[in-house]
Length: 464
Ligand SMILES: Nc1ncnc2c1ncn2[C@@H]1O[C@H](COP(=O)(O)OP(=O)(O)OP(=O)(O)O)[C@@H](O)[C@H]1O
Image 1 (tube, protein in one colour):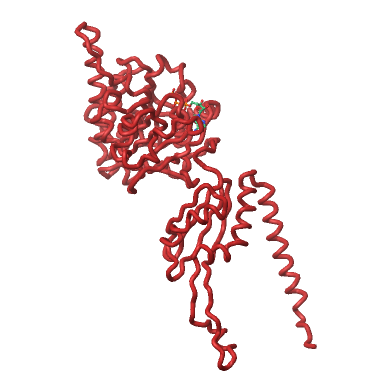
Image 2 (cartoon, protein in one colour; image 1 turned 45 degrees about the vertical axis):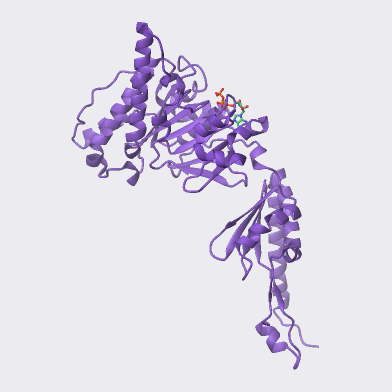
């Protein structure tokens, strides 16, 4: 018998320690994981064990008739080594919704073949849905979700920490539980539509909570649902806003004028102050923040008043002017860092003038009652994607689910937005209230330090 090498016990010990550490890490991860993730971890083990067999049955293997180098060397004279069946190698990750499988492609087993067998894989893995997407050259990522992320409510606890990237708006997760983010860079307007109680306010709470800790973002709001700041959904958030008005049309008019004035001053000074024509080339800063105007119940401020008495005529003139002012912000505010978010139950032309609505590049729609309302919120193309239509979201299980046209991609995405409680929103607004600053004053300060004055800096008085 050959002598056992001297180092064998040490090598064995190293292997045992490594396996022990791996086991310990896995057990700790399993114990610390939430219930859904644990189920997915067990599912991942089953997927791995069954993969070679399943891949063969699903036609995801390929037979290589050329023997491998080792088989050629060791082959007995006169005999032909058997062909090899190649199975794609996989890497697995589990999360609370299911498994993410990263797989290699093989000759004749590419993206298309994986996509064709998606239904089969879904059944075999007991998943509600399986998607296959490219994951770089020679690789695909297979997402299997056990439970439907769209009908699984989620909650977001804001951290209160500033965002690393203030252009990134994280909306929630799609039907495969993948994060959905939109870039706010160069976006002048966003529309948010949806029936009452569908989740619009919670989505705005999340927006405010996420962006409030960043000093490079300043927010103003006009809320058509309330008469004063102490009422309604924004009662606590108002602490982190440089201006607020309720449904009073005169006040709203003054707020919009004030922002148009800011837009004009920024437009005329941007090249001197920032050295660029488009603020997004340098990004928002504490001195030149992204100024966000939220207009909730937007129809309040734009509705057409019909009547011949003096007061009705005055109100009609005010709403018409409001529409012109907001149009100015949406059409000319992008390059100077002004973003308008318009929220309304229906975004039909009578609620938000189409000359404003149609220039907003991002449209989000929570549940809608009619196809017409869905078309108004998301464009005519939604008729071609009936499965994604917000009309299908009227079930209470879909409260908090929105539909959005994807930037630079055909079709629509359904997004489960997380719930943000009013208490959390209030906490963040309170903790970040000291960061609130009026962008007009910040511009004054910038111009002062640069030794310049703006062409027209007459302040427009406004109540907060
Ligand atoms: N993302 C969400 N996930 C789970 N539940 C939600 C979500 N958003 C809202 N809800 C639930 O729905 C209720 C109504 O939501 P919200 O106030 O956001 O609706 P809304 O669309 O703003 O309604 P309205 O038009 O009347 O203001 C909330 O109190 C909450 O219970």
